[in-house]
Amino acid sequence: MLYWEIFLAFFIPGILGYGGGPASIPLVENEVVRRYEWMTVQEFSEVLALGNSLPGPIATKMAGYIGYEVGGVLGSLVGVFATVAPSLIIMILLLSVLLKYKDSPKVKRLTLFVQPVIAILLGLMAWRFFADSFEGIGLWQTLFLGVISYFLIERIHVHPALVIIGAFAYGGLFL
Image 1 (cartoon, rainbow, N blue to C red):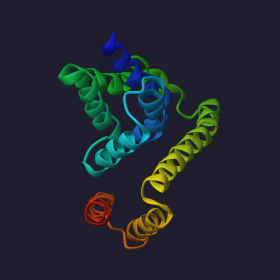
Image 2: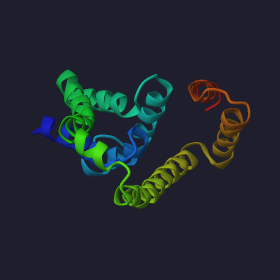
Image 3: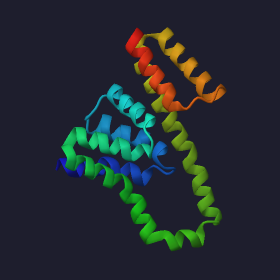
């Protein structure tokens, strides 16, 4: 039953998370943190930060790690398979249909309706991370790290992985 739950926890977000790994992160968080309670929000945010600092698709890295934490090596394999299975199924079964209707106004309109929902889910997840950080390290530390991270990533164009490593170092030294 545990492996079925791991499969569902990553398969359902894979189906509903239109837009790839980043779009499915709030859905995975809902499954892992709220539905199955395998992790806290803080633990999930740490897994997300670690996953973002490594190369490759974020969704499969998170599925592999969380699956391993919950169900060992087999749980890891099930989680990764469940993450890629929706795309695999769609590619195999619907590729010709997708190519035929890719310019359809209805398909384009569906995309326009889904994008705001994903944006709101990402915003809510960011707000929860901010609230947890505020509770854990306080307002000034949270604002300092947020402003410095924004400046480094958006203005100086430092790679986000380096900013995350720097934030880890700052937390290890000062927090």
